[in-house]
Image (cartoon, rainbow, N blue to C red):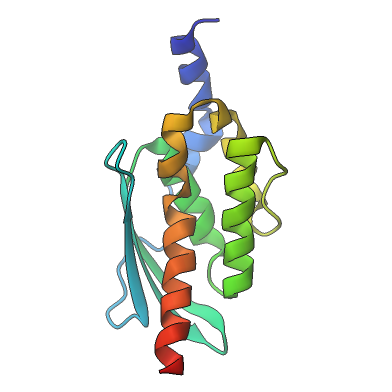
Amino acid sequence: MSAESDLIQLYSGRILALAADIPHTERLDAPDASVKKRSPLCGSTVTVDVTLEDGRIAAFGQDVKACALGQAAAAVVGQNAIGRTRAEIEAARDALRAMLKSDGPAPPAPFDGLEVLRPARDYKNRHASILLAVEATAEAVAEAEAARCV
């Protein structure tokens, strides 16, 4: 199989379906924190807004300008972010990073849908785009918590 056909296989029907149905694509009017992350390699960007209540994400918005892989990751994050704690978001981020970089296990539920991106582990130039949504969410939650402690 050629590298080109491998890349075509990477964009499975499931990944394309996720990319076409990203939830929470409206930015929040008054978020507790907003974080924009950009992949310097491909130029993909994700901006995440969060509000917190009792240490959990109460509202979530995202603006996603990424390839289908980054969009699919943002869809899974968006489907599951509300109600999650900082620790849960960070665990998902760390597990996704390990899955891509060292063939670790899929992220824990409810973020186990990120398993669909496992074939991308062989495409290191795609990793940053895939990680944008969960990294931005983790950073936004951390910033929102820090702002409340001031």
